[in-house]
Length: 183
Image (cartoon, rainbow, N blue to C red):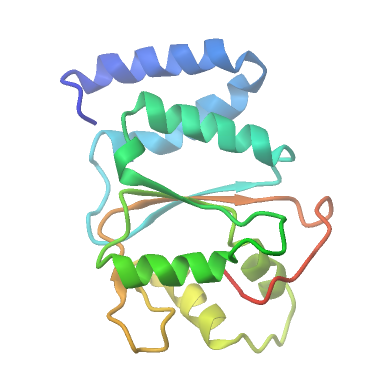
């Protein structure tokens, strides 16, 4: 955070968000509590840190709230949305993640994605034989150090203390559509 008094600013940010989104006070309090180690730089710089938003029904509202949080924390220049749209012509989350690996040696400070839905949807089944990308994602979710989706043709992208906010809708409420990749 670029501001000088982090504790005071965090309190102001929390109050501002509660005024902007009063109907989401429980969500915001829980979400901001999970952000504190990142804001106060108490997290490991060697691994990724995840916040999974599971079952949050309104995807557009979640994205709006997260965008407001990112803006108030002044992280806009350090955040990337890896957001898979419902348009069949838009790039898949896997294609977007591969492009990030080609462009960066390290994850951005903050990565916001809805692209892990397919992965978690597939993993819930027993005796699953994941594709190579799925195996790499599973390894990354466990080890949190580096990710290689290129099949070893590029250097892995290093986690570097990044924050990954993952939006995963309830599996019962979202119609499953497969777009050709796991991420």
